[in-house]
Picture 1: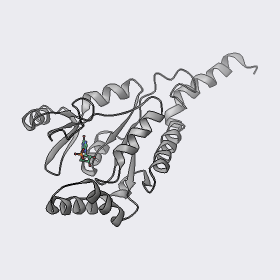
Picture 2 (picture 1 turned 45 degrees about the horizontal axis):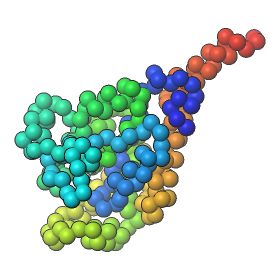
Picture 3 (picture 1 turned 90 degrees about the vertical axis):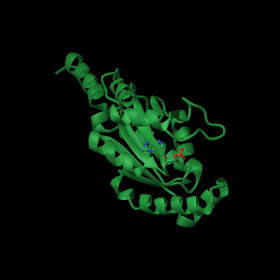
Picture 4 (picture 1 turned 120 degrees about the vertical axis):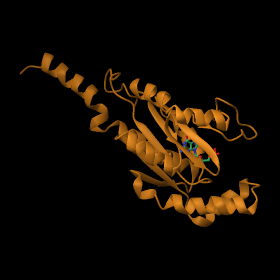
Amino acid sequence: MSNSAAGGASERRGVLYVVSAPSGTGKTTVVERLVQRVSDLSLSRSYTSRAARNGESNGVDYNFVTRERFEEMVAADEFLEWADVFGNLYGTCATDVERDLARGHDIVLVIDVQGARQVRMRYAQTVGVFVLPPSFEVLEQRLRGRSKDPEEAMQRRLRTARNEVAAFAEYDYVIVNDELEACVERLRAIVLAERARLRSVRLAAEAIVASFRERAPQ
Ligand code: 5GP
């Protein structure tokens, strides 16, 4: 259902989705598929001080900035949230998010657990989704399969994953990425259900009810 399916709903404020999962869970792929399939929903582009990996480009995967520039943005209070993840800085630009939400556009932030906590403190109405891997073994296998990280970095990722999964109960929804397509569809179902919530459709529904007051016999 699009935002306007229940009538002209441009006054509706967008919904902010916050998706977290340990590194290696496949959350980026899941969310990229989700935004291709659901209208009026886009993925927020974070800023990061880490170097672009092969195949990544500036302004597409991330806004890549120097650590110095990132720290200037922190000092100028430009981030809705930011965090140090594996020694690199990552953050969400507050004005980008606010502009999209004010336009009635729904946004997904794919951020770590620390960042999600900061967002919840700033915005009362977020929809949090935690994506769990099916098991520790599956996550370890996926991480080892895709990465040429030295063993020490691998141990650090696994330790971080252990702390992150323990935070699942801070989120509104929890889904397991056992099979990519099934996981995308679970996430899509969450977005569709959230769009039917009273607080999301209230303005549009009131407009429909007003047309009854004007035209229907008493
Ligand atoms: P990667 O370097 O593999 O792209 O991302 C590493 C981690 O940083 C992931 O867990 C991802 O969720 C997190 N991350 C990416 N962007 C942001 C952001 O804007 N804020 C926060 N807090 N974490 C982020």
